[in-house]
Length: 398
Image (cartoon, rainbow, N blue to C red; front, side, top):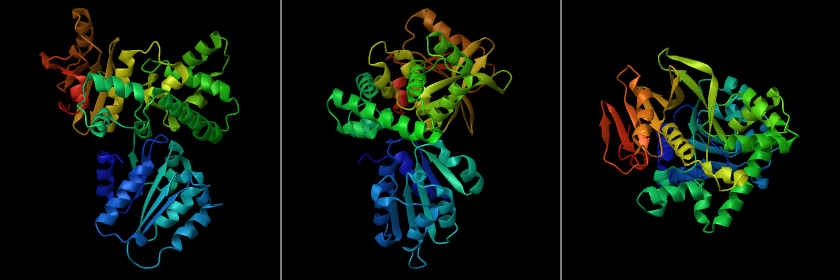
């Protein structure tokens, strides 16, 4: 198993803290494996196996008719006053699971860990019931750096191309033939669409849901509005209402297939309500719908950079300065960092196009252009141009 060190360290940090640890992320991104790694860590530091209760709720052997049945099953295994560690994997498969989780949480010698494959886990009643009593750890498929570690290779342009061609889902690492990977991605996509989207949202017209999903994969990194999507599909002979598009997009985001990124007015320091962009959690899943031709390398790179910023803990927005756009405004406790992403800026006109919006920002926060160009770090009056592979590999962290 590939050690997902970033996430494992977070679990270690929150061990025995009086909070429910909630690991969220797209199906098959590695949440169950993370539990296995953490359980091995607990055993290695001396936790008795009898004090570790782990239940995979996708396993048919672990079907519970109610939250109370799940709660009683776990509670019956708590035999003494020593600390117990309870792991509930894909907990959303139990109706009203939040009541079982809350019940276990209030037992003084129980440390609770749960996972789920859709954002419903932290919406509605659960969030209300557990406000201030949980910490969310958002998990993603493999980063380029993790991918390089697995293959024990240097992260370079060749490996990057392999990474965006094969898949960032951990299981795909075990597959050798491209046809096997494509079949796996297709099966995974269908499982997510049916289980985490259609069933949960009670969407009967799955063919239209697939049309909307295909449109979104074909438009990653483009400014979109719900009305624009509805109008475009309708004009293409696929009539759909704005309300239906809104419902489908909400479900696709909640199942972690896509990430919605809002716009931020840099000069006015305010968040804007229109012109959002959507980025895929795994760019290779689009091949299941669109094939491998006509790949927009620039938007794929932009998508990879977005995911890395999220992994590093930034809040990410699309920047607006006057009539111009900044690809990403990344915010953390230290302030903002502004990013432009371009596959290459070797042509003078392209470099000027990327520099101009950054030059119009009057604050002193870092401003960076990320490209695939294999050049030394350049500085244009405070605006750094950095090789994106080095940045992804954390050789030049910003």
